Image (cartoon, rainbow, N blue to C red; front, side, top):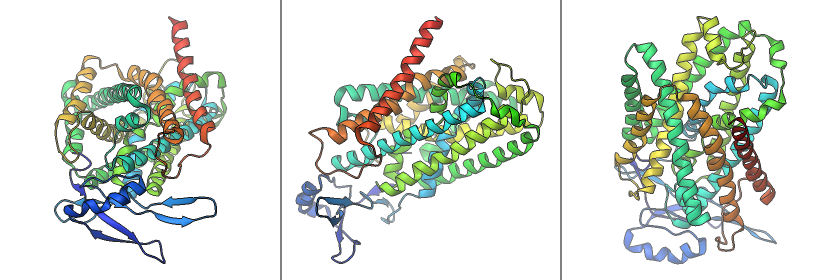
Length: 473
């Protein structure tokens, strides 16, 4: 199911009233689209026969003109031709569900050496970092939609517009690598849980998991997927609450004061991986019709929910086990020491993986559709087959690939694709001489200093990991 399968974008001329910043919509038939050309050139925003041209609300000042807009286009139902704006709550749940994935299951294992106190500081800093990069992607995405005059703009189109051929190659291979690596981890872990729960062979549980989520993403409408995702997130909250209630009885508060800051850098790739949601930002921008205010709210609130979950989850796991053994997964130790906690952890794990997997299937299939130049609105199964089959095969070839895939994806995928690349694209988009004179307001303040910190921080972690791996070998 493409994000355009249940809706289309219909051209309308939005005219500002003289006294108030309100807009009147009047449908334009295709023969009259030539009348919009002067307006398109003025706004630096080209329109195709299936898009919306938007007049900006304008406020005069003594030094400059500030342009604001509510949305770039309108999503219309194909049958009723009524506008179906994307739901902000569904967008928040999509971000939260995508973020709360298999990474949360690995956080206790990679932070047990640094301790809860030190790792909590690292988690908060990683959250801020990933929120900033997500806002940068949203800013570039809306600018690209405005310039190209089309919705459904993927990371490839954004990289091509801002960084050229080299940027496209980096974006393509990084995007494909991280998505396939994480989908492999998701299928491997979920199939292992389903096999133990249902008593079926591993290949059947992996295939069942892939078919259910793949069918949901392909056949489901935006609203249905949002509703299912919301129900899954609600299930995560309920199971998480039950886990906290059951396990907190054995919580050792002294254990939470442990802080080994020297071990923090080793955990950063997995923590950063746990906050990955940027792959659905282009989908958000399209579903929310380019409304920057809603996109910003969805990103900040949608990632705040996982932030709170990660902190409490880590506290419960690390603080409930006496005498943590380094090298052994704390989750396995907790399950072995408390028989009630085991089933709750498995339910929480499956729900967390499912919500994240939905976002990654939507993001990668949308990406592949753009890469294959499939028309927007074409409900083709090809991108979904390419998305689901390779991870299914790889997870069956190596059932113990879960932690390997997470570590590799976090180190060499996340920090390049969702660290260095967004800052580099934003630098080109904001400061390139060839960039359009009119752009949307910047979602991330700080200018070149902020972008330099983002690129430098990611580069430092990647280089440190490379040197450490070389030293070990």
